[in-house]
Amino acid sequence: MRDSSKHQGLRNQLVEILNQKGITDKRVLNAIKRIPRHLFLDSSFEDFAYQDTAFPIGAGQTISQPYTVAFQSQLLQVKSDDKILEIGTGSGYQTAVLVAMGARVYSIERQLELYKKTSVLLPKLGIRPRLLTFGDGYKGLSNYAPFDSIIVTAGAPIIPQPLMAQLKIGGRLIIPVGEDQQTMTELIRINETRFEKHEHGDFRFVPMLENKN
Ligand code: SAH
Image (cartoon, rainbow, N blue to C red):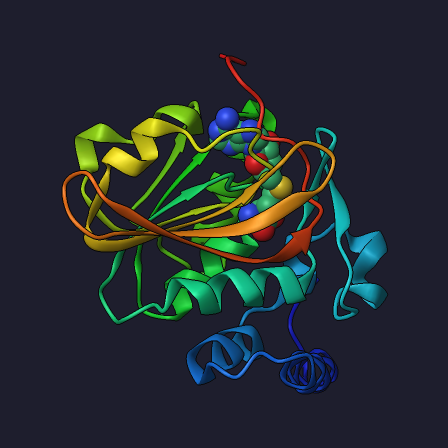
C-alpha cells in the first residue's frame, strides 16, 4: 500500500468531521491531515481507514477511533519539543500524530508482537519517536522522566502512581479511567504533592493489562 491523492482527500474529509465534532486545535487537525492512517491498518481495512472508527490491529488490540486520538491529543496541549510519554503504542498511529505535532515521544507497548511490528513500520514511514520500548506501562519510564505530559491509550482501572510521579510540575496526564467504560481524566501536576483533576466524558478502550512480561 502507498499514500495517494485519494487517501489525502479522505483525510481532508475526516479532518472536517473531527472539526465538526469539536476538535479545534489546528496542530492536531494538521497532524491528522498528514498521517496516512491506512498504512497503520491491515490492507483489508484500507477502504475504511478514514472512517471515524476503531479497528482491530492484532493481538486482540485496536487502533483507537480518530476522534479519540484527536480528543486526547487536544487535551495534551502539545507544544513543539514537548517530551511526551505514551502508554500503549499499539499500531503507532497515536505516536505518529504526536511526532507530527513536533513532540519528542517515548512510547511503551506490552504486547511483543505489536511492539515488533510497529518498530519496523514507523521508521519505514519516516516517523521517528525518541523511543519505542517493550514493557509495562504501569511503571512508566523512570529513566527518562520527568515528562511534559503523559498519555495512556488503554483503559486503566486505576491511575498508576509511577505515572503521576514522572510528570513535570505543570505537566498533565491524560488517562481513561474505569473498567467497562472509562472517564477521560486529566490530572495537572500543581506541585510536588498536589494534582488538579478534570473529567472529560466517557469513552471505551481496550483494558490496560498488568504484568505480561
Ligand atoms: N495508541 C494505540 C492504541 C492501541 S490500543 C494506537 O493508536 O493504535 C491500547 C494498547 O495498549 C494496546 O496495544 C495494548 O497492548 C497496550 N497496553 C495494554 N496494557 C498495557 C501496559 N500495561 N503497558 C503498555 N501497553 C499496554
